[in-house]
Amino acid sequence: MKYKILIVDDEKMIRMGIKNAMPWESMNIDEVYTAASAMEAAVIIREHQPQIMITDISMTEMSGLDLVGQIRQEDEKMRIIVLTGYDRFEYARQALQLRVHDFLLKPIDEKELKKSILEQVEQLEADRKVREESLSLNRAQGFKQQLELEQFMHALILGKAEGRERLGEFLETFKFDREQDMRIGLLIPEAHGEEDAESSSFRLLTIRQICLGMVDGQKKGITFSDEKRRIVLCLFCDGEKKEEELARQLMDILSDELDAKPRIIWGSIRNGFENLSVSYNDAVFALEHEREAFEQVYTMDLNRKKEDIFQEVFQEFRSAMVRSIGDKEKLFHIFDRFGMAVESYNLSAQYTRSSCFELASSVYFAYYTDTGGSGPDQLSALMKALSGAERERAVKVTAMFLEQLFAGEEGEVHELVKKVKRRIHENLADDLTVASLAGEFYVTPNYLSRLFKRVTGEGCNEYIVRKRIEQAKSLLAATTLKAGEIAGMVGYHDMNYFSLAFKKHTGVSPIKYREQVQKR
Image (cartoon, rainbow, N blue to C red; front, side, top):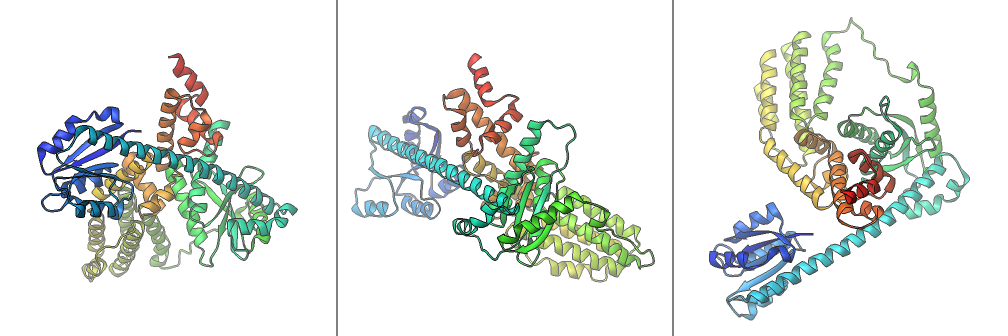
């Protein structure tokens, strides 16, 4: 792995002298940044995240030790070498307190500086290997535990004796509540015509991975498969139907990431793991006996007032706009259709004002909930602007409100996607999911999924897979590591999933790819 280094000194001759004197490439360093002040250094650190820094102590505006103090509040791992022209114990003591890794006096001895930098690189490499070994061990243990969990859940829903006998041990191992209310949902993917067996398997495994991130990763339930290889979701209930909201979010993400339209067949809510088989059997029965009786049929009484009829249409517009928070273009397209509906239903001005405010309020709160922030109280201003407005004016005022709400978003959107992509590039071996990445950046999974696809043109999960396969191709071509080892290094617990993903992106298996590269 190559590393980045930052040289901070207010004397140009010194910082450029260091930059030009070192044989960086042979030292495993491929990017060298320089800064003339601590302020400039802070910007470079934020944007480029170097792993090593060399800094002078005595600088204008902010001293090197103050800069180190700021860095240590956010980054414990950066390797830091301090330079100073003052041979004073007080500086050395402060440097040690700030966990500086070396302390060199000016004028700088080139050999001594090179030796110090190499020591930092060696330590970074050692730390990286320890992390990778730890990750491999954790992945192996996590995979084994997940397999045990799925086997137990499979036995439990089928009412097998081994499920009931091991219930106490299972609850102790996984720290689940015996009296938890829960319900089963069978996830039924959209049929894809003449899809071959390999593509179908890859699709199912991808759906399963996304479910694991959204459900298991957030401790909101358990994902596993039944004997017919159907994806089964055991969702925890709290009496507020949050499991149905989670399921809707999951369906939205699967729709964004895979261009699929899956659905969930629900079983009944049951108390305790002992009764989970009842909920499962309910869901299976509903799936096998789907009739019109199982579906809600909405009838419209044409004698009702047009406002009552429009209310059902309005709720569809509101839900669609809230779901489209991460896709500004789509959201405004839906709002345009809302404006057309207002005209075609010939609504009164008062009813239009009320509908506009409710729509804007829903989008406003969903936007700040999804982005994890808080904004100015713009709703009061909207209420005043809508007061007494005629129908057409009310729709225009609301459109202006929405434009203002999203006005400053574009730059932030691209910055967020840029950070997510960087996180993916630098940590492919981690358990990366849409849900885990969203949590790290304080947004909702649905918002990140839509945002990522709008900006990059591909789903976040699809991007992760593509980057992992690109790294796997490099490792297969440049090393003699086994395919199973490489799978682990690029973040795949399941060798079968890795092989299917690799073949989908390259057209050949990992072994065949290596043979082709070696022949060339």
